Amino acid sequence: MENYVKVVLYVYPLLETIGEDYAEHIKNKALLSYKATRTEDLAIYLAEEILAKEKLEWLKGVVDGILEKLSDVERTLVAIRYFGKRRKVRTFLRLKERSERGLDSWSEREYFRKQKRLSDKMGAMLAVAGLTKERYEKEFSGMELFSKVDRFVSEGRDKKMTQDERRWLCK
View 1 (tube, rainbow, N blue to C red):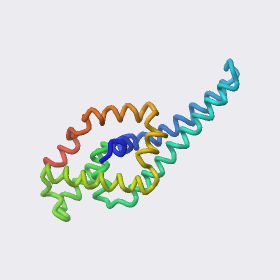
View 2: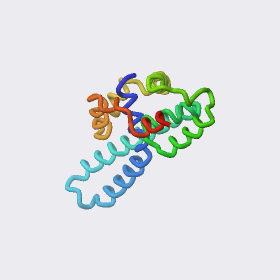
View 3: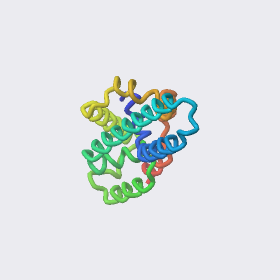
View 4: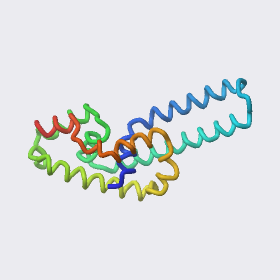
């Protein structure tokens, strides 16, 4: 899977609050515009911030749409791996306890194979929805949050099994 797909999935839980934060920042900057030394520079800055906010909202909508198309098990696997949602892990543990479809017999290797297939599927779905590597590089890679997460992924620090994943596999 491409690194940009992982980055998008890791950033996804923050997109809702980032959108709200951008809106608050833009509003505050506009209210304090009387302090600006050059009105033209401030207008350009605000326009760029509005465009960045719209891009983030578009990205959130794309990922929301893709997550809706996944099965409950796939959504939970994505949440466990990328979102760190403890509630989702507990839900998945209940699924596992019912031993539907042999979920309780996954080995660590099988779990990672399923994650790999799901990641590839998510990457293909993102591309179909319009988020290609080129578009990601052009519109998102320069944003500070994305570049920090990209560094985390590029250094391979995302390859370690999280506590939630380990807890799920050990049950």
